Length: 541
Image (cartoon, rainbow, N blue to C red; front, side, top):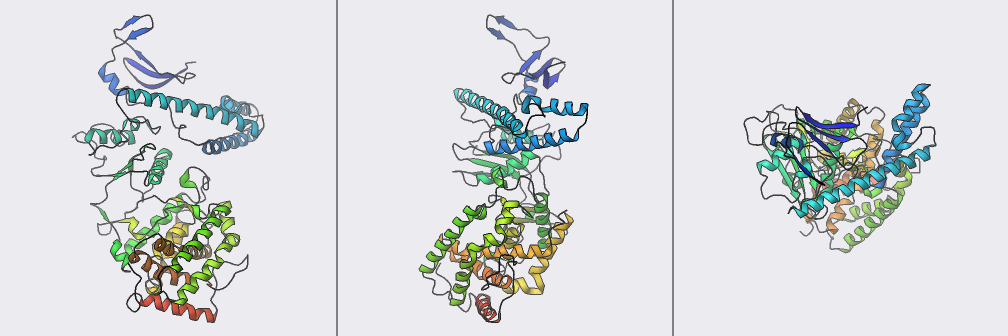
């Protein structure tokens, strides 16, 4: 039985691994002259052979960036599958199950803990070896005048400079497209490039570590081979932890797509998009959420699958409540005399009940990941791009620097409540119709166990958490032109969807019905927000 594992081959060469040798690759050449002496050999490599083999990686480095937690999660999953396969197998099939993983996990007859321990020992050793290889490569590159650190995400991609050039030169782009598999032949400028190659690109460069979360998100998608129709194609996602520089190479959609509403219109509270655009965005959002609905990795590594830090666990939520209390105290201490007592009372009561949300269902959902998914996390209408072509069905969601595991309704509150007025939300049942369309699309995408009533409760809960966002924005120094209209939209939405002054029991849903006295306060608040800013003075800029 051959122990050779071919990497590439041709009529006159064979580039391969030896199965049990992780420290070398082997190149066998035919019809070639060579010079050899003690401890030294010189072999001329034909240029056409070199141009083929140089694009292939000599080693899999995919473990190098994984944390202990990520490795443990993968090992546990593999061991549990192996144990289940072994239990289901009979006769000689059991021997095959044991044989299939014996070098990594040991015998399938040993205990689960022993197999996990063996698997971790194996993969920790593999990871350490890959990290030593990366360090050795980096040292050689520095010795040859190249500051480029190696990245374990693909053979050609490792050759791309992390310290980005002033311009995206053709040779740099060609390498990126080769790595992404969209340019099998030809170059960025050349007549032999296939028609499927992109014609326009967006190079998004970042410095000082800004938005590296988005880079990691796209790297995760590329590593898993996940491609969704509402996500722009990403050809390159690199980050240098030393310099803080990072880059994304994406499809440029600026000639075919546009924002459904401008930021200026959103802040002026004229941010209701065309109905066709809104419907396409809601369907796309439902499909995005459905793709990760109750995903087994939710709540775990990588970071994109971790729960939003506000309520990652009970300790995180307690810190979040403390922060909201500090921010409200700072807000009240500032000069906000323009804000009427009714709105101040709304915040005071919402803040008083905020700590109890963990026991009223938030804790159970976060701990079980029931009806949870991956969310965009900053899903304003200005994060969407809609097709400029009449009748075209094509929308994209962009800027994933806040992606996390979360309630799906979190994204919906950003879209429908943050900058829609009370009148805009209620006009012809606009908000309810949008939520119903989303729910129908979610069911059509395969999510069958998420009831309409549950969506309404989740939307209510997210509003409860989100009304403190404008307070945070104000305390953090954002312009009043941003946080003030946001507050005037979120407060009426919160009041309409919650029993603002009631204290539900532990088993009562978050949503409820306002008592008559509270309804009068609600109407006063809604009336104020509806007339803002024409009747009342605005906050200082």
